[in-house]
Image (cartoon, rainbow over all chains, first blue to last red; front, side):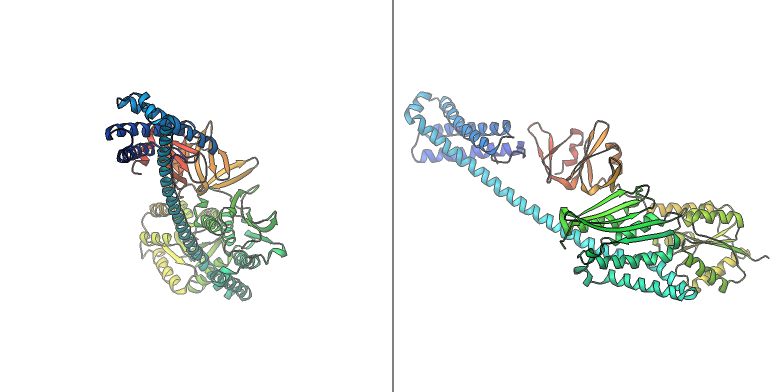
Length: 349
Length: 255
């Protein structure tokens, strides 16, 4: 504990614990010394070892308190100084308290012998506690890691479930089917092509195989089908463009990360606007990063708009797939609308 | 009696065409005097052509079908159209309001039309006090769709406006006239005050620990007591520590 790194704070509780352990340890030393017939009787040994132990302890604590920000080498020197001052001061104090003249004590055992004993026991106790503390700390760290892992596994599972649910959003399902049904009477050819888009969208979003081996081209095909459906539904109110360089089509990319952004752009950006607007989907690769942007010219960022599950779900999935290097960036588009960008390391699955 | 008039309001053209053709089959006497593709146009149309019935899609740009219904001050019966909206359907059932589901089926449409015919010819009493019914409907739906807590924080970087996810925030700290938003990536300044933030953020995730500090509970590595008796919070992954003021110390009492 005394060897703790600089940024950690020594707490009151830990200091008291340290003092109590020292008292116990000093008692053991006194019993041991009496056992090997060293020094005076038990009482004298007890008093002297308490004095030495507690004064070492105090010096160590003071050193720790005042030099918290010191480097490791400086700290080691401080600790050695604290041990020496503590053991000498403690010996002196002990002899005074036990009624023995300090001169006699130093004469009887010699300065070096006392110093040696003090430093030895001091080192033992310091080492004992620091290793105990380290063990406790590493156990705590293991526990924390475990919790972290379980939490992220749980989050990933939840995100997957939400993704599955989002794919077959009932409102989208029924509205699309209504359109197809209506087109069968009025424009069967158009109805047929809408149904084809719908089938492609459903197959792509429900296929389990896609989860492991998807690429950007496939994701864009699916988005194209999705937007094709909305083009029929919204007519002139929707314009869109998908701009993905050819060489990026084959890049493997997790499915259903971009699609929800497109869905958001439609649902919250364009649909609420009387005149509708435009969606631009683009992909670029630069400096080892792949950036996929969905820009809409819709209503833009309104507080509350983001309360839907979509965005936090994407963030959670990016987090579990790429850690800190996968990001979802939201910006206001000029003059209006929202720009959502997914940024991931380029070339990684 | 003159033939009854009706309007259809839906933002999707195909669905207007379809409903119109279905109505022509089942209720040939009904005159469709106009179609609207958004809520505002629907309201205007209702005022200009004074229909006996308005078929209103719920999800429309401009005004929603329910908002349109709320503002109608002519004698007009409303039939809502919805593809799928559990809350709305529940509310309609509770208030005994007419509605049809997309895709429109003949059976359901016939049933609705029979009811409408009876209401128009006075056999069945029209729903009492329509505007109050609509107010209750709105209240019921608003209840279900509360905006929720602040999830994204607007941050201006020069000309750009970025949105920081509240999940990424370690803490908010007041500094002069601004508030510092600390994420792993760094600090940003926003104008929103700590007081305002504490009202808008999810109180389960964000705790106020000081007059000028709000911390994300997920980011707390440990809480310790300093020699002076202050509670000191160490953060995960970040070196800085935060102090809990005495008036908020009870938050950590059970720990």
